[in-house]
Image 1 (tube, helix red, strand yellow):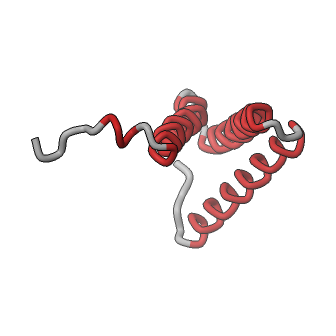
Image 2 (cartoon, rainbow, N blue to C red):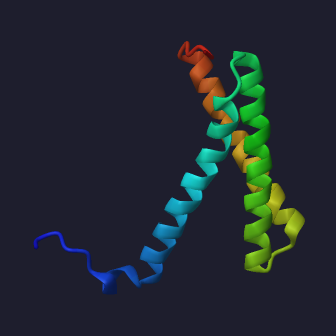
Length: 102
């Protein structure tokens, strides 16, 4: 097979980080998507997705800081602030390009 999966290459730290990152991003994206899928009002959906996303960011930041041995508040705050900035920029770009919340 030309494109066979090589298990030895997956055991490198870079490959392990890539797999864990993929899982974390997928889980992090599913949390707000599930929250927003059950709300029909566009404004309510936007608020619910934002709140659940911030809560998820806090949980992931807290988990990462505890696993990494950092101070829990600093780790969680860094992830929440970075995530909120990213959501704000995304919302602003969408608004500037004329995207509608539906």
